[in-house]
Amino acid sequence: MQLDEFMQDIALGAGQIIKSKFHHIKKWHTKSDPGDIVTEADEASEKYVIDRIRSAYPDDRILSEESGAIGDGNSGRVWIIDPLDGTRNYMMGIPLFCVSIGLAIDGSPIMGTIYDAIHDEMFFAERGKGAFMNGDPISVCREESLEDSLVSVSWVRRKVDGQAFVEYVEQISRDTSYFRRFGSAALVMAYIASGRIHAYMQGGLNPWDVAAGVIIIEEAGGVVTDFHGRPIDLRNQDIEILTANPALHSMLLRDVVSQRA
Ligand code: IPD
Ligand code: CA
Ligand code: CA
Image: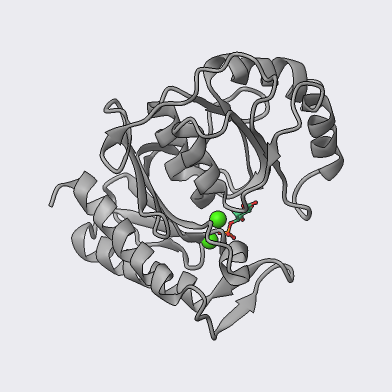
């Protein structure tokens, strides 16, 4: 199996695991705060993905949300895994969650996939080869004005300045009131890449939330940076994301984020 097929195959397998346990969770516990949950589905999905990568590519390293860093292989490649992104939605019975798997070299993604098992949507991209959903090419929206655009603004209370985000919302609300919060950072990024929403900004993210999304958006013609306009480095532990098509991205960077960043 080629690397691209392998990555999508493990996302499919992991997605089937979490889908089969949806509405049937018996075991779960909290992590940093009461809203930060790990379920038996996160753990089963993660074990499946890690076992498959370790047996197929023993020289690669792994960074996975629940298990941390694994392996000391010297291939230079790191698999960055979120076995279930959107666990809070999942626990509440909201069918908006996904598996996210990225492959990176030197902090930059070279391939990534995001799989939404409920809607059977597989988003995939490889550097220089375009972005796809279920095999069909996708691209970011072409909108050049924020007026009436769909914008996802989100933050993590314990990690970032919430007041800044309230001010971003206030600034953007001069142009649109179509705000969204999906509860799954990876899925939001897949939706940016496929032109379903126009812009997304969030602070307090982890590498596994965004590793696949960054390359899928870039290959779909979008721009992904931090709030200073710098590229995302997946070796950072606290990641902020500003993403949209090039026109909307520069508008948000100049008119909204740079006022505070
Ligand atoms: C979370 C989700 C959420 C985002 C959080 C993430 P998890 O991931 O992506 O939308 O706001 O920052 O931690 O815990 O469901 O994998
Ligand atoms: Ca996550
Ligand atoms: Ca997760």
